[in-house]
Image 1 (tube, rainbow, N blue to C red):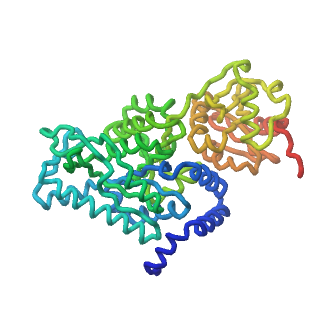
Image 2: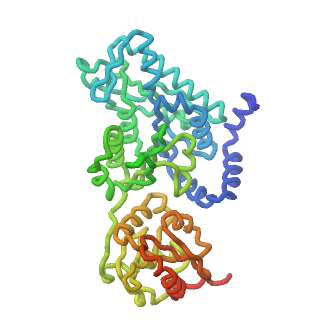
Image 3: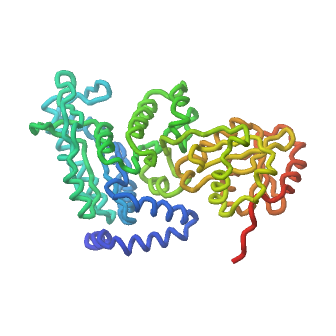
Length: 452
């Protein structure tokens, strides 16, 4: 077991450790993705990399994976700002002090006699999290108060509950300058120095508004937003999905409130920003791989449905295909294409182009830039595609790394020469052999690679 000096040494050797870990990760299956995300994150001012919200239940039940994940991020040069609550701990401490827990409109009613208990409980929890991060070799600064200036919301009804009115970043800047991850509790004070309790969502919202971070991360026990079957939702594009989700009967209670809060956050941020909901032990996978390990929510962009070839911007579509596949389409690609339909993101960073094989829809090209995959645009395009074409065929080269996704979404696949032919929604199995033969024999649509 490493002693304290060894742990401190690990925290100080940022560059060598970062280099070693990046080299190690580069040999993993998703090494390319990990390097891509590290490069992307490293271009963001570190105080604007991410704001992470952690509930008290996560600290209580998952402290070790939480602290390990935060220390690892710091090891690779990323230091998010962490804001934590302490709901279960406060309920217990106030109960021991004989103070009843009452909530109105989702806020904890806070009489004056509760403030010393809340301050002590949140400060102890803050120090506990900081020490756990240090025990994992990370560097963290305890900042339980002094960041949020607040105004009382309704003292007569809620007591000493404040809404942030100003963010003081001096302590955050000082921690970041010293190479420490700032760990903030939800304690505020009014302009006359009166301490107040602040709801964690309100604290995160105010901090996000001030910093405009690249990422907002919610670490929860479920690790994702769940659909009507209880399965995790991998990505949500608010532009295309929000209204339908909010109109669904199964979206109620906590999920509805969470969706409203996330939309409110993202409406105040640049298009490049996103919200991730995941578990502490899955944080690095959520951040550094396209597939992620939770729910990624972005404001997103509209998916255009183009039914006439003349309305497709062929120059932009050709550029997208060339960049996504690493080589351009053949020169007469669009001329010989029996154009059926195209589903294209507004930015032309993701597209599905279909043609017709008799009465069957054939997916001729599914092209998605790496960054767009990470943003969920590929998933948004695919969703529109399969809604349009419940019976669908397509092919892919045997060595295509996207085949893992194709196998997951298809209902059948057959290898034929250098191709794998996929289908979904086919209810006449006798058609499949002929379709496979026809599709495998289609001429190439991409220029051949030039040998170096």
